[in-house]
Image (cartoon, rainbow, N blue to C red):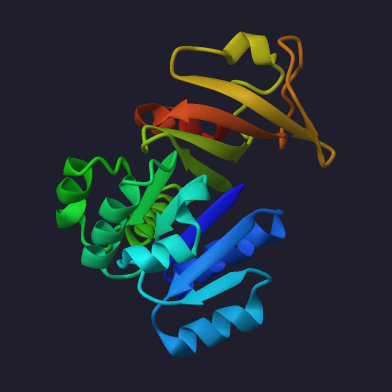
Amino acid sequence: MYVVIMGAGRVGLNLASNLVSRGHDVTLIENDDSLCGNAAAELDALVICGNGTDTKTLEEANVADANVFVAATGNDEANLLSCILVKQFEIPKIIARLSNPDHEEAFKKVGIDDVISPELTAAGYLEKIITRPKVADLIVIGKGDAEILDITVKNKKIIGKTVGDISPTDNYIIVAVYKNGEITIPREEMVLNEDDKVSILVKTESVKDIVKMCTK
């Protein structure tokens, strides 16, 4: 996969590094000379010192061949303008970083559906960790309407029951069980023991009930 990223700040540089480590081709565009130098020293990727809101710079990055374009600067206006320019190249996927939630409507009006706010995402994640102390780990999926929870079974009401006895329902399903440190895709007849760790795909509206069911 070929990915063009505009912005070599914290978000853009980490994204580029992760993609390169997974074997993807990456070109990074940055107009700050010091950030360019830092990115060039850290990445096994093409780094272009230029303005991603300039068509010539985008063409130099061969953006027309990209599978994905990511506008990852901390400037919403620059991200929006670059996405508008990139749309003429008919790239399959365009993603924009958003710093101010008030600007989201403007991005969507020009057809940029994949708008991400790292700051809001991190804040939401921290809020869930604070308010759900009995959950060992969680992953928010979809548009925030579902989560994968890692919970240790403590409730005597489900200890000794099978996965089929309590899952699936319309609101959740047990997708993995960890026994003796090994992960198992659960079968209906698998018995849940005390201190088993389970991964549960659950609708956000039912999270409180699931935590109560497993840990009370």
